[in-house]
Image 1 (cartoon, rainbow, N blue to C red):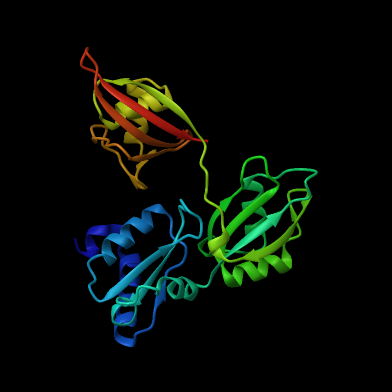
Image 2: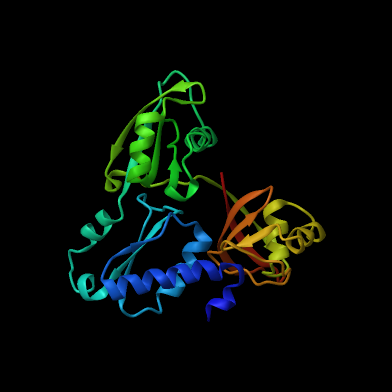
Amino acid sequence: MSKNDYGSDSLFLQRLEDMVCVCTEKYVPQFTHFLDGKSLKIALEYLSRCSDIVVLCNGGFVNAERCVIGIYPKDIYGYVDCATDEMTELMNIKGLVIEGSGFSSFSHRDCMGAVLALGIKREVLGDIYLPKDSSLAYICLTEVAANYLCENIEFIGKDKVKTRIIDVSLLPEIVREFVVISGTVASDRLDSIVSLATKLSREKAKQLVSSGMIKVNHFEEIRADFQVDEGDVLSIRGFGRYVVSELPGITKKGRNKVIIHKMI
């Protein structure tokens, strides 16, 4: 697939190509900003075809969604078993712990709003994770942004907070909560799965799809007859995110069994 096949993402691919050229010609590692799921998939697919580089993807957290991609010259980093720590260190990403007072609480939205209000750009931020029943928030971000936030953030919402920087290896595993939706559908078409997930009629689900309200694995999908597979992630605007966890088989009446996890 050429860069032109990526449409509006062709500029992103051109930037990646430039980074690969610098890496292989000057033997200088190159790093992306924090990328979302769609950009990560595009980048990793493209970089997998480049034979002279080593690629490392790191978002700090186990189960991170937003990650930095490091591109390293294979002649230097491709044959050293213990090079991963050095490669990670070169990324210059850190963990930030934000501790609330314990007398009030703040949400993910509050945390994001407070960070962005200080002029921090989204591209220098990875995931923000607030463990349940805790007054802590963890952020993976660039070292420069971490230092800036430590010096400037005092409140999140109405809660006065303290901050400290930690190594990314100390960030916790992200535990995602979900509710289970199970049922049967006539087929594994996208509109059928969306209907089950949202509890909308098949016709309304089809309208959501055709209106561009659905992303499958971070890519917009407008085909109602698109065949959904196990593991597919559906983002449905106005309804949330869903993982098609299992397609266990067919019932005696010929309907398809489906188990979906809705993220909460």
